[in-house]
Length: 454
Picture 1 (cartoon, helix red, strand yellow):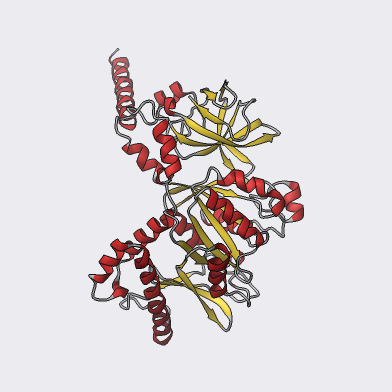
Picture 2 (cartoon, rainbow, N blue to C red):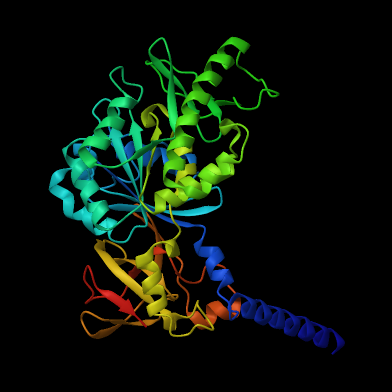
């Protein structure tokens, strides 16, 4: 009896701890909700055809550990282009979604078609995204479809980063790309990196914000191994590493000249930063965190557009691009449109996680041979559990969510659990919440563009 009583006490104690923890998660403040959504980025990659969009996506998946192999378009083994027609033709036909983790951030990544015939796929994707990466061919600059996708991103007021890819080409030119951005898109690009060439071969990049010089051992007959990246901070002379004094001095001179231009341009748009810089003895000593904060605010407000460099096929610059997604693109509630939806559908302010506050948009319908009809949705407020009934505002009908899946290209991982079981077990991933992009089954009448609420 004593043994049974002891076990009963332990079970009661565990249940009490689960209840207390659940109350903590669902406290009257939305601090936990804000903390979670602050680590979410919903990003789309768009580009003119053959700019290297899918190759860049494949590198992101591999570097983040989400994919075990580095897919190649010309080999027909890419993760994101999984349809037979896509692999045969070497082009993206349908939007593909994947979830990756980088620097503790949860990135919902959408790879869109680059061909003009599939413009509508791009439009549907951009409608649910918070940020965009527009990829340029370094030897071509702004092309016809680049203008089209830019107009779409501008219509949705999406903060954008430009990534100049294929900088390993002999005809690649950053200056020409910057000029084409200004003339053809009428925007103010903000160059954050400069390329370093050795005998006309791209082998390094200087980051103007951090002062880091990144070097890859590479020639034009091979690709860089992911472990061959070497870094040295040019602003910190006390830590001379692999560069000789002469080379480090030349690179430092190049860094200081371009970093000063970067800071001056930021000060033209940011009065707070300008006041801070004026208070400093030397403009070059401007703190990195101040620059990052300014770049982030100006990017989100679409006053300036960061420009990064790389060669995705040769594994150059992809990590910096991932870093910039986390640093400079907005979290869900930093977009005015998202914030308005969040506030409007907040029925139960005491529990921001509650499914009573649900607002979601269906943006893609997909038929899976095993799972059946799947609806891709973006959640703007509240939470969604497997087994929930949702009301379709457009169709004026109520439908049941059978299962919820996290999407990784053509792979679907079930995360849904009955809300009562999930809360009782305190499952860490029992629902989809604010900022999530997921696929759900059971919505037989819902179509693209429908709004779902509790």
